Length: 271
Image 1 (spheres, helix red, strand yellow):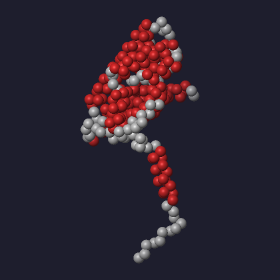
Image 2: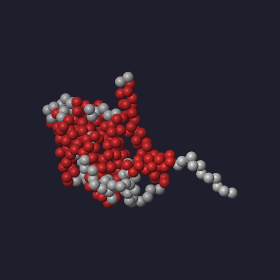
Image 3: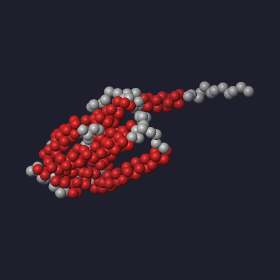
Image 4: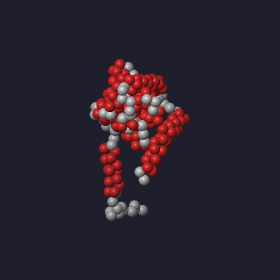
């Protein structure tokens, strides 16, 4: 029996168009072509997370610059502090340790991150205790009312930051922009102001903003690094991967809840 001849009126062009369109978009947004080698990524990220020497000197200077800017209500000075601060490096290093299943790296850089936070809050507290200007400026108050928009901003900023760090030719223009957008240093200095002046309502808001920024930068970085198939210390079991996903979802929801409540209240206040 002869096979039925293909109907010349039936064209496969639409299928080819769909496949071509998908291929084009996949090519346009692909992060593989200019990705740095695993060795380069490791060196960059872990060097940026060091809590020694230059990074610590820059941290203290950034704290003082940010504190002065917040105290004098100077946006330009605050932006300068965000450009100098190295604290985001520790967050990226923690994400790298998580993705590569290296608990020693996670522990080391998480400890370093906590040290940076303590030094930042302690130094800024001392500054504001000595400062003659005690009234809260608008720049200080702006760091005490975080919302869901800050969650989105930290997520997008974290994605941009880790993408810039993992390119063959390091995107040096990305990191300063991310540092300004995600603003890790000003909330810490606002915590110092709040402690120095016993303004506990401001302290809770500023601390929560810092937690939002730090956690969602970490989350975004982990997502991008996980797609790069970096060498791991060991392969996780299915149970370990499942438990890790459950912990991540649970923690993300807990961190987001206050910001969602704030967004709802903002919506009702504007309607």
